Image (tube, rainbow, N blue to C red):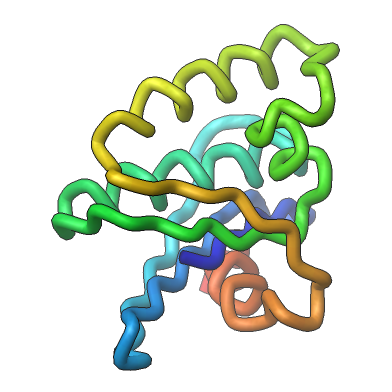
Length: 126
């Protein structure tokens, strides 16, 4: 799963891309209808992606994101210094028991372009 959040003058949105082992792709675009920061948009994308993976019956999930903050906090490598980020981490960790294996992997922005494009669709009014 690849995720990205987007925040711009038109609003906020999330993009989620699932890629199966045989390279089938499933794309999701979400529009966020409440005020968020860019980091919250990223956390919302990862949380929605995990919930969608559970609904799809995924049991092994590799989560790729270009937000160093989100990935490192979810990996417990960085402390959460903001209460809202701490709450997002705890909520996401609660869902981990639905998987045999789950990993959070930081990728450079160039390797997350598909999710980025989807998130920008979600944050636009188009």
